[in-house]
Length: 322
Ligand code: SF4
Ligand code: SF4
Image 1 (cartoon, protein in one colour):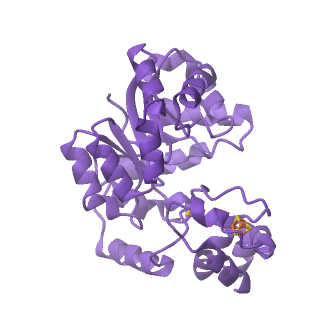
Image 2 (cartoon, rainbow, N blue to C red; image 1 turned 90 degrees about the vertical axis):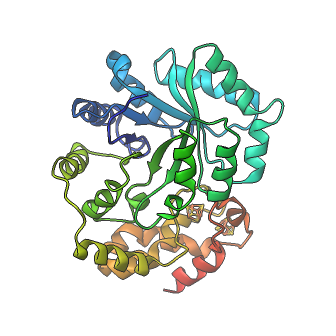
């Protein structure tokens, strides 16, 4: 499949009014974006993208995902996505967040999700099959099965580990690479640094989440006027990396929801935000979230779901104290 150098990530249009979301998606298409990524679990995102692009369907590549690990669940999700995306076929169908051994084994087992997706591919409803993951060992194991044509993985200058072994393996296996979270899931503010870094990896397709036309304009501007990273840029990137530390919350929200109402990602990024932003800005952005940390009863459920194995309850306590 041939696609634009920059793709479109379908999460940030979730809270937008339908008309507003459709206008943003369409604007991105009008600017030349031809790759749109969404997921069955992103409420309203598939419908908004499907509606915005219905009359140009042949000119775009639509990607979506399923969290189902069994054939019946995946089959139901495929049917639903075809309706919501208003299309007869899905160009790329991905297994969503395959980040532990259990998930990878379940989807390949007899009666697993892969069977349903492969059947849909044979029936012409799906062109290519891929996966998204947050775990290098699991993504590596997945690529070695030879079952996947694309890999979607977080990639930005604070999460550059996949470049060491995972992406070379993908390249050697002719697996297309999609870079999720090009702006660190909202943690990174300097789009120039983020996309300057990504331009060094031209075979990784970034899918920035875009909420407004101006955001896509800024990104396209950075590609039209691309320049090599300067020494000052590299120094700024190193400073940001060291301020965030090794184990930071990637805001993937796989730990959510918490039955006690704790807004886990908002609490966990508090410390990093407080280092870089004014107290007023941090309070405005995360003030409500941080208060919910007091509700934690330390049941540990979130820690079992976090693909980065973060010590969430310890971090909640530290951030609340801060
Ligand atoms: S450990 Fe705390 S934050 Fe995590 S799920 Fe339990 S109550 Fe919620
Ligand atoms: S705590 Fe873990 S699962 Fe939750 S948002 Fe952060 S990185 Fe994702």
